[in-house]
Length: 394
Image (cartoon, rainbow, N blue to C red; front, side, top):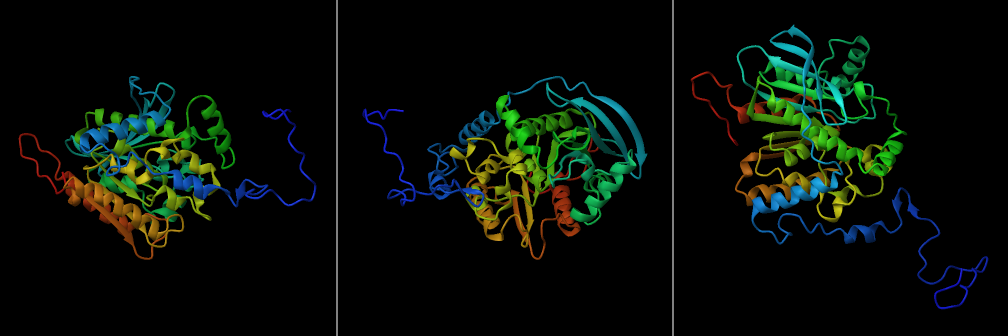
């Protein structure tokens, strides 16, 4: 190959030291690119609230949401839901349903819904499951699977590991909340993934003009719209709740969906630069593809995306000993979120906490705090012809 200047490039001399300034014959430093610090320095998040030249918050929120939407790599979807009830059974204080509906133009899914006894419409929660590298169960991580013994065994083990033995959806249903849980692509009824095959799924979705994170985000938007459309549900009192990857999904859905009016996110909040450090779990790839919108970091940081939800009520909880998110990284992200809600005179609508001694779990004490906050936000269920009591932060 001839050099543009017309001369052949000099051949490397075997055994000679590298030219001055030559970085390394390797591209990786552990799991990170050897030049990762320079790439991080280039990330200035120019669209973040307070940095962006847009000073009107509603206009900023519209521009920021449009930017996230572009990076989902999934077009908006208005496919009719066409719901069917495949099964309904009574439980103590609520009804259990298996529903079928079109979550997008691409997929018809089986979902679990719990509906409290009594006259509605009821406040409702979209339950968003975690990753956990456990793919045989998804929605069953949060709603007790009464219909499948094998999944019940797996789900009980997961509830013991992450939720203090509780099924979060059943707990909420007993408190008077309607809940809906849907499998993300790769989990539960839509399983087939293994830890290693996540990379192949991501690569093939990228080649097809899509992404795992974008597909999941669009499905979560659609699930929220479906939940809000149901006659048993009060459309003004629809919340999202999730743990771990489900927490990421919860605040992301609150940012991207007008149907979600409040959110609870347990054990997933950090800044991107704080996450991209040696030893962080995200550097392993694989599961990270479900929380990665290619190119979005050139515009917005992770807390900036969550900030699109402002001034909606948002409850963030985590553990001080979580090995996946350092307390310092979480507090830095919390501080940025508090500044956004404060700028909108909505400090009382944002709750941030790190519970001492807790790891990567959504323990019963943390659940009780979150449930009480949801109850206060929603107020009492409406009564026909009667006034509605509203809790703080609505």
